[in-house]
Image 1 (cartoon, rainbow, N blue to C red):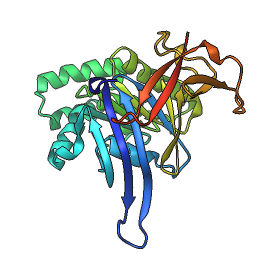
Image 2 (cartoon, helix red, strand yellow; image 1 turned 90 degrees about the horizontal axis):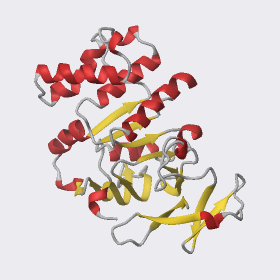
Image 3 (tube, rainbow, N blue to C red; image 1 turned 135 degrees about the vertical axis):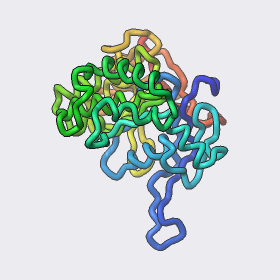
Length: 295
């Protein structure tokens, strides 16, 4: 894999709080992770596993205590805080469980806010906002304030706002957590569309195993470490391409050969139907995750 295909690369990332003090807390423990351009991945784990911390680092809201983060091929340590702020505004879109919309202004104005900070002129802002309202099916709610919208409508406006400056990356932190299942389904379908039709790199933080299974890759965190990476079992329902389609079986690899497991974690006998594709996780290539592709 060449650097040009990578949007995110974390190498030996550690994050500590209260460093040097008696109550020093280490939250991330040597994370190695690569996310390709245009990939849709989910990060799952119990509360306290480090999901929010890794989200903050991926979104350059925080810097790691140790290790290297390459964003679109560039080490973020080469950027000043001011430059990182600009990168956040242009390259990364955020979607949160609690929507984080600004009260007392309309849905339209909420969507326009990132473009205002990016100094987009009023005509282009209006055109882009109209496009985004249409994309999320909220044109008829453009003049409504957040307190006049349902939870699902708020989240659709939040997604539109995240897309305002056409970022390459969408970071979604529990975007369906405050929604009922039907509305959550609608929101998830928007993420699928942004990934499939607009080529966005999407990183989904979620407690929902069902939604995680719809992504290309499911990354499991525990105690600040990645303990498992595998394809989403239901991803193929949305994308039929052989290079990314996966079977509903869970699998890993042993000595370069794909191995299937059943729901109880026991090896099955139908592993021979997989081809193997490498997912390097460090520049040295010392750590490699494998993904099976149904032949």
